[in-house]
Image (cartoon, rainbow, N blue to C red; front, side, top):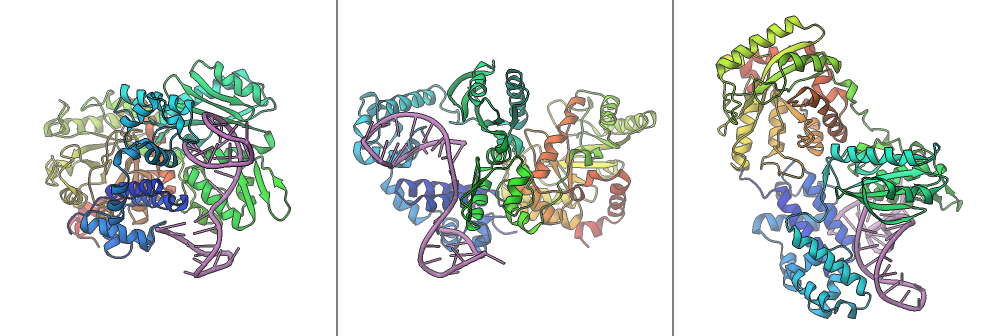
Length: 594
DNA sequence: GCCGTTTTCGGCCCGACTGTTTTCAGTCG
């Protein structure tokens, strides 16, 4: 294994900074966008982009050409990018913070710098308090107020991000309350739907997008203010309303005529990047797409679409599922008729990762089994934590032996579902597991995962993970990156090497469906499946109710372009167990690959 | 800075809103 490269996150941060600096420098918007688009491609890549750049292959990523490849190479080899050095000398770092304030952007920040010498939030505050901002052309008293309010908010909670994001389940919960409230206040023929990143089933959500068709749009927009969840409405007209909930989530309601429902839903489902790419492609065909319709240059007429299917059809595309609308190749696939038939929740036949009171779960084996059967599952693996889990929840080898007996006994007692005796075994820092092979060999299903020592470095973590993958008794690696959405970055690991090892050995990788995790993340799950890795979607339920979390895992799988064939637990248990027995009978073959 | 069923140069989505103007630039999604 080679020396770890500069992480993709670090490369992406550098490109974003350079984009910000170029924007301050007055570069044309497309150049700035090129940096931001490249930063996203780098962040999403599952292989080391620095390593790609060394091989001259970074240009294979979308949005990265020769110029950016050279800059990435400079960063990887010298630790810095010359252009960034030059621009940093020109624009003080505090100025970038100024561009982040609401109502201020790069152009205004640049004006403030050149005309008032403002180079930090502190100097901005002084100037605003002295009412000097209004001396700059284009700025006035309202902007001064807004700036001071924003600075006040930062003072009161310096760690809070400017735009807090909430996890998908919470966003859906609030969104559905708003839907119900609005529907109760409107006439029966009005239609209101959730759109935006909620509809795309993203991991976290910045604001809630609602779309509606109504014959009385102004009344509908006003009724938003009457909902008990709404703290205040910042604007309302016949086109819609913007508001904020008491919980601090932004709400955007847009309204159009019923015949435009398809256009509106398509537009407000996004993503912004999907729409931008869609429109650019449409322009080449002489069509101009907006939320109100499709303008045809040839006829000068604007066609409206009552359904989204019509929108895509009018543009020569197959219908694209919302989860795929991220500008990750879906337009080319739709044009070529090569979109995947995405997995659905009903394809799932069993859950292979669950906990009970034996470790940190809250229900008994029997309770979990009955709840799984209630969901229509054919099988459930009981996989409590292992001998070194800590938190007072260790399962000693002796306890695991008793647990295996208990699972077997319960299995004979309960009809209609197959219970599997398993464990979620810790992968220790040196790559070994915390039960003896003799004991692991008695289990039907072995989940292995990292719960300690996240900071051992990329090389050590990759070797640790691959050692577990090559262990002949390990069936699946759980939550392979360790990330917690909006809370914890993934640990440093070479996923490309992990995927190669998993594909070679037949060890599966999990999409953990816990809504805090959704790990593997969508882009990585897609890369893993492409590399030939079999994916398992697990709830990781710690109580009967959270078996329902499976839906978030399926959502992630759909965002990863996965079909039912890509996911192991869409199959009957007998089909899963056969290749496993072979592997266990010939572990050497398995570890070396065949 | 990227990119090519018009193109290796000249394009590169679309509209709403705000605050400032007096017809529009900047910001935002």
